[in-house]
Length: 258
Image (cartoon, rainbow, N blue to C red; front, side, top):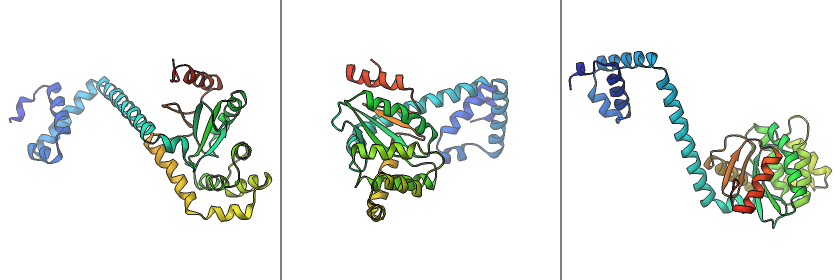
């Protein structure tokens, strides 16, 4: 192949793009160092003259990543449904036998989770058929992990409404919370602190949080709060009206949008 056939800028850019996607050994054997330098120079000139190419490429990459994320989430929601909705490691509040389940991945130090608490509480209070699953996705530092560990260990003592009281108390606390604040909240609500400290040493606590982390990774959740409703996943805080509409739609047509 003669290099001088790539005289036009557009052809050189296409040539370089094709070369990029070839296996590394093939590229190395195909081009000399001088050819690679010349290709780089021509591609740079082309991109400077046609900056929209970069914008289009970024938009296409973003579109492909979103498609891949949606596919991964759909696979996880199907294959990991039992762990997502019925894991013994999670807390269930609201109606444990409800006809619609809302799953929240949260962090006790997440500001948006604190804001969402009011909406979740309002949904539970206004919808007697709503089941809510709380998953400790502790991603905001060591204190968050400690608070999640205490909450997970407290599952042995507090269930349903009692745990919901603890959850609301800790999540609505001002400032950063960790082990001390979590234990204090549990104690105030009548927990056996000595037993709680013993339960905290169990390897099952680490396993439970690891399970949540793995599910979050598989769902491509990188922030809190994140939600699962039916067979759909959402990331970020949602207004109460939007959450209620999605739940109502699940009952109507099985999807968040009918």
